[in-house]
Image 1 (cartoon, rainbow, N blue to C red):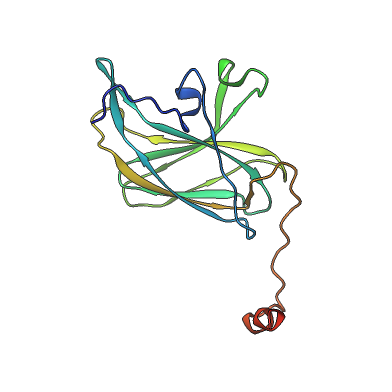
Image 2: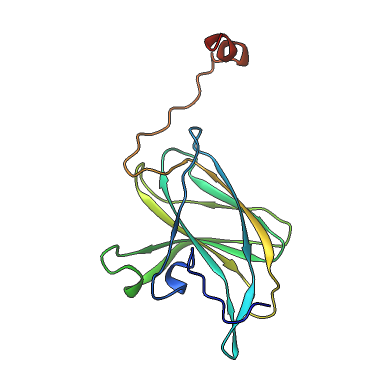
Length: 166
């Protein structure tokens, strides 16, 4: 177990003073796969838990994230006043629990082009060794105000795509 760990990369509102939120960008298909680590660590004489905060922009429907983890893990969509940031009220508006080895999908609430914040953290607060989790995003871009991703054309086949590059 780590001692006096400080998450200066993506600890969000749980990592003062910088409150770093990791910005993620989807591919041209609006999808993104991410592997992360969670767990607990010692901060002084107490146990603290690692939380990872991510920011994405909605590009299309479905707009969701599916998680799986080796330990029970909370996925939550959070909102806060951008002017006040983590110093103001932080509210969970939607959440789901990924149980051990079971996938869970969090439907994200936003309009196309809006930024959304996701918090991922261990559901247990004590004695959780470092563990791996995966997040599979759909309908995301990395750019504010991005136009909606059009659905694939049903007439487009793999052969037609290869033909375009010949």
